[in-house]
Length: 158
Image (cartoon, rainbow, N blue to C red; front, side, top):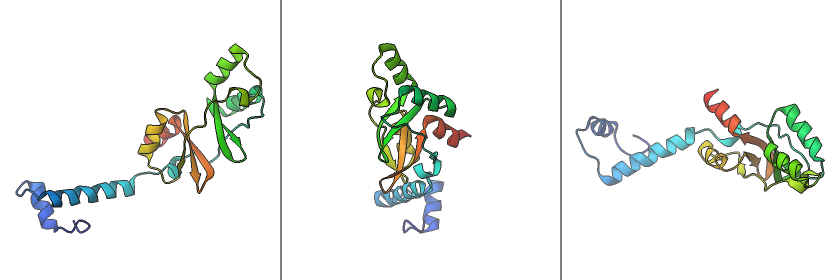
């Protein structure tokens, strides 16, 4: 009530249905509630995996497969000079092996996954994960972590 500039008794009357608030008062109340929700919402930096397992574009595909198998992951970002330049996944590698298209990661990688600030809301990250296998997290332009669907589910329900 104090953040909106209305009295606690007015809020109680509105909640009890004894009074209808003016449009402007209702709008202020909802805006304050939304600000409070956003303030308390988890951020990308809080749920990211801090160790980014990656491959370089010059690595042989076999080495990427070995890294993925050892870490039990299905995709890896391709990093060059501390920047994300692509992604490889089990399905990309399988397709490349079947079509015999190159022997290096750079020959088969797909577009880079999105990179978000460590302060990005989990809701925004969740929306990106609908279309991308992973989201990278940065702090002032430096890659700091990675979030996958598995990470998100683990943090929400684990």
